[in-house]
Amino acid sequence: MTPDILFTSLVVVAVLGALASNRVPAEVTMMAALVAVLVGDVITPDQALAGFANPGLMTVAVLYVVAAALRDTGAIYWIAHKLLGQPKTLTGSQTRLIAPTALLSAFLNNTTVVAMMIPAVQEWAQRLKLSASQLLLPLSYAAILGGTCTLIGTSTNLVVDGMMQRRGLDGFHIFDLAWVGVPLLLAGSVFLLLLGRRLLPNRAGLVEQVERAREYHVEMVVPEGSPLHNKTIQDAGLRNLTHGYLTEIQRGDKLYTAVGPDMQILAGDQLAFIGAPDCARELQRINGLVPAHGGAHKLKLTNHQRCLVEVVIGPEFPGLNHTVKDSAFRTRYQAAILSISRGGHRQPGKVGEQVLRVGDTLLLETGQTFVEQYRYRRDFMLVSPLSDSTPPDFSRAPLATAILVGMVAINVLGLLSVLEAAFVAAGLLLATRCVTVNRARMNVSVNLPVLVVIGAAFALGTALEESGTAAFIVNQLMGLGIDSPWLALLMVYLITALFTEVITNNAAAVLVFPIATGVADHLGVSPMPYIVAVMFAASASFMTPLGYQTNLMVMGPGGYRFTDYLRIGVPMSILAAAVTMALIPVFWPFGVS
Image 1 (cartoon, rainbow, N blue to C red):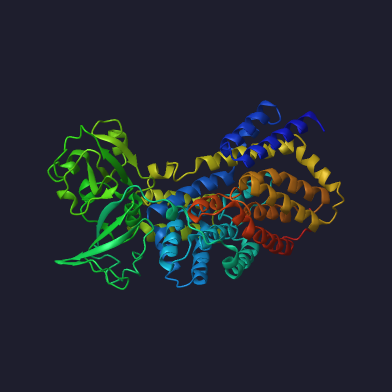
Image 2: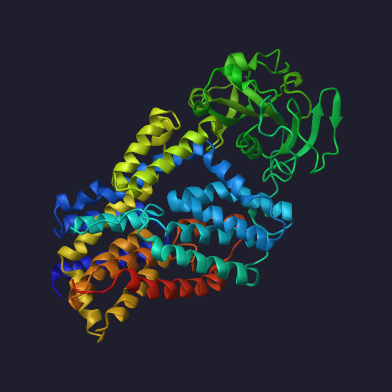
């Protein structure tokens, strides 16, 4: 063991420990490792920074822009609502949940898909009188399985594909991995549907455990030409909202207070909702509803410029003890009041007639610059923006969906590479204003920490090769007497699967990649089966909430415990390993390198 091998091994062990402890952000850990191997003279500066110019990393970054456009246009909400339907049972809900989630995750970042689907799943649970814990973990697993079906379904696939191209190997086409991914998705889905009822807990999530501190009265109108016209409350998705509920409908001179699920909605109806601040954000994402008294259209702001903000009125507010209308609030602050809460309780009645008092909490729809402009002024004691509250521009949803389909089609036809097709799609989405430049580069759209982890992980992978550490590890493993290509393949899969459960999936893939190709070179066989095994094993994280971000995202809303992941994740992992190990040699034979 040379000094470089010893030093690099210690760095890798430290990285594994830091990532597994989850006490230090992953991007900080990986950048520290990059600096260590660079200062330790294991790799050159060019090698240290090469990962940040890798095609796989760039493709991940560009696809974040595509996903942002699909979110901002409401295309994701529209597709999910259409495909989910109105199931009646738990099994029916899980069946209707898995299909659209897997479909969306095959072409979009699965973290984005899960984030968008969680509110819809919580609404389902309330409507069917089911625990969200019986649906949210299958949501995460479906997203993971769907992501394995295409090259762009998960960042891990793109990262490994980039490493392949750096070694001079031909990259994958977008559907090449479907030969294993689709059977794995089908097998995992059947397992969840047959045994999920027995293995999943029935437990209340955070939404049910925590009472809301602020409650608002929000009124929305069904405008002329709305797609909700003539739909029932149930079919419109308004029966059980996640963050509020429908209390009454004003239709002309008639007020309907007993609103049943079968009551039809008509154009011109004014709907009153009661709920938390997030209720207003949830209502904005329903195509066919507009604020009743907010007057946001008079602010002359486009959709991407609008957001929701909470403010608390201070003692120096100039409109104290005046009605909203008399205070000229909208003209003075270029903000529309959607609702008023006083002492944590909603204030019913028309917003314009409410008298403003010190301590009142206002829910505003305003421009993106409002927070910076009024954060430190004495008009308000507190200015707090609601994250990701820009209303979708549903009119551009068909265009954004068409561009996504076109991106996939031109890659499948071999006209452009995945990176080139993604760049063209992102350019078209920006040119057609499906997403703005500011929105595209916001941290909510482009996940910079993930990109930093990937870029720095490339440097650590290079260090493993350049220092001879990868070759040393391969020799130690081969010294165990493994001379069968299939057993070696299983070993590579299990090592990657173990790593991905305790560290990030991208880091696991980059660290094991040089070991996997080293094993293939040692055996004198094709590296392709081992590379594909790394791809699938790095994504097959079912046993812990730490290995995959979507597992962690559903932990709180579903009220899950660590043991819940083990109970259903261990058999899922065994099933994934069996399917993958059986199919990889069929479609990527060992052959001779």
